[in-house]
Length: 405
Image: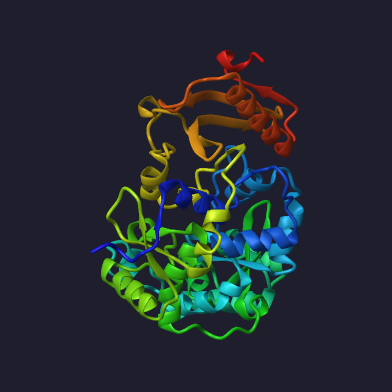
């Protein structure tokens, strides 16, 4: 008996994915504004934050890939002054749209999650109630503080705060600060040269109800499909790590949402794996433009969060080599995939030297199924030039074999 599920070509699935990720026509027509920033967060679900700064911070580089150059300070204002986003756990540490706060409060309520408590490192990492009280009192008495303030010696603290603080702080208190952030008692209120500044959560977060456990679990599926379009269960696993569901829980969430008709099951030609989608996405899939244009993708980009999906749909295997010893690296330390007309064309290994204001491209590797052409060379050079402009780099050093043209 023929399947009654809607069926789509793989190319249509990819087109919808790039549409949801904001990569149909990158760095072309849409500028980064408060509205488009909010839309990006709502569609993809989150912007991952990471301290690695080889080129630029991960969330800024992810935005540049889509929107081109923008003012970093304006993004910080939208997050830490206008409060349209907040820092919490989404896909690892992330920027989340403020509408996600009710869902995040459920994780805060449940913290620490079971898989943390069952981990071998948890007994060494968890802290005492006395330590947590010290941290909360310090924030209550003195307001926003950086995490480094919780490692200073007693005498330094007394000098800085002009007395009145009689409890020595230590590394345990710094861990408590992180745990209190996870549990929603404190919040990140700003960044100072990327250093986190904390305050009591009630001073930062707006009044928000707590989502139910089922709503929180459903968000793994519904927000995952919002960011990916048509996807299998395996393609959504770990797209969000909050909630972090096991295979049994994921199956229950999918079954519940199918029954409630909030999602639909579809077929993708060439595979027997069940795929799923939000009904509203199927209305537009046949009208989508084919991806066009070239950009460079941050290693922490939401396009790469689920690497099995990238391999299955794009035939592109990507692994970060930051922690690989240099002699064993295949492509480089901080490699940016090259997205060209909806396909992964290659990899580029950059380094931004801030002292000398120079963007150096150490190497460029094309994928085996891509032939080097003048049009591809031009597109890659233009992407590098756009990145240099964004970084305010005055000089660009390309590999010798890529300098012509």
